[in-house]
Amino acid sequence: MGLHSLHRRAARRAASARAAVVLVVVLAPLPIAAELHDGPPPIRVNVDGRSVLVDDASSFGQVIKASELRARTGKLFDVEGVVLDPRFDPGVILLNDAEAPRTTELEPEDAITVVDGTDETEGTRRETERLAGRSPGNPQYTLATSKVMQITTVGRLSGKVVSVRYRTLGKAQAPPAVALTFDDGPWPDTTLRVLQILERMHV
Image (tube, rainbow, N blue to C red; front, top):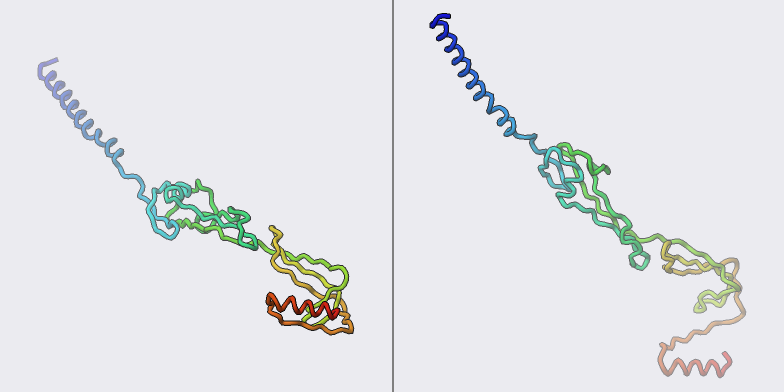
């Protein structure tokens, strides 16, 4: 092989080596650029009336925790205002007006709403009892007596009395008598004197 051929071969090798170096230099920045590439942009969601930006991979539960959302618990009261159940209605946090698993991945424009529990008072029930014998009505107006039904309204859970009323049953019977009433105050002295006079007169 001549000297001229050896020079040409050496020149080709040198050119290949330079091309390889250039290729390495050109390709080397590509992985670095890939690592520096921006991720997906955040999404906008509505959190209890506020528009906020969250990571595109955020879940329903993650936003609840990050926003420190908590529904107020509603209580159950008896007819006198005493608490029967402090956790009667725990409230709820909704996603797009519906209950959803906390692992649900959020979509743009999703709405998270806090619905507080409501306070309530127990209901009532009626208890009826037919009283024995005959009972008078209002003696200020009549001496008639009749059979009477006692109607008591009580708390459905507590049983506490709300009201008591009476309803006459059947026909009333009035005796041949008259009722006298004394508007005495009452006063410490006059009430006793009136009673003494009535007793002396066998009234």
